[in-house]
Length: 432
Image (cartoon, rainbow, N blue to C red; front, side, top):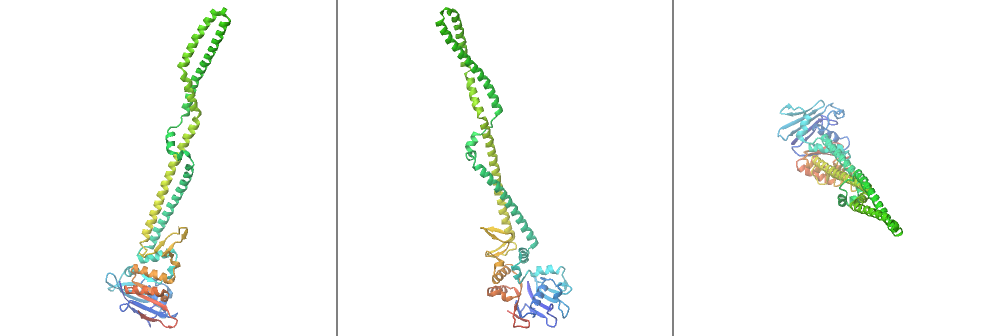
């Protein structure tokens, strides 16, 4: 795009008797100076209105003397065709070869690109306005960008909340498991508690073994009695030889019974041993059952802990991925300038709160001096190849800002700067 001429015949304080003509084929940098009331602001607003950057419908912009708005801008578009913008009180036209082009505002902005304007109001603006300002230079939709940033913000917030919930559950389960010896001795517990205790079956075994044991005890007692009888009989034999015959018969019977009893005890000795073993197992069945159930609970808790740990890691990954994608999306409107960062949500880094906003070299742009801010803005203009720059209060740039503006001029940008001069009582226009 090549800007050729801007002519303001009527606008605000500028009237047809003293029109302002800026021929950009002679120079690409025009400067104006003057005191209050010399129409510096009228000229700047007229140019921005003619470039479709401001609305023409504000009544204060109509020239009082003529009752008109009359602005003409000619330029060569990137398609190498010559265009003319004609702005009046009633309409804004974009002409090419004598014909009027529909949707002139949209077409004008596409042909000339974004216009760099005095950015001091942006410096103190809220984040949404800064995003719109940046989006205008990057040809991205600010509204769509804000929607996408909100989506990233909500996604990250949801992921971080889920991660925090998982971490809280993980912490509680860790605190529970770390105090359990069964968990800390996992391999031993796995071997010990492989099978649940069947108390009912064990009770049935105990009852059956009890019956056998009782029978054995009765036999044992009977045998003892028989042995006692034997002893009594022997004494009676000694004492009562006269009853020898009867007692010998009784003795033979006792010996026979003893033989049978000893044989029984020998044959069924295992019944009492089995009962003792079953009784021992039964006595500790409740403890074994409790230990088994506790082990199952610990395994369940460990499984839950592992699930929460996995969920925490997953949500952490989701949050990081969303944060990365957000940075990629931000790069669509952020210029590739070292130290420039867009923070779309309040964050805490290393214990320090970082408010949302545009940052440069670690500082919010609100913290930048006017000179630093101007320097950053002009770097942004350079990166986005802004071709037309209209600046009020040129004196606020400082030497470094003026130097950068000079470089933009050498790179082909078309510039109009206005500067307050209390000694200059009429509008003075000259070129660099």
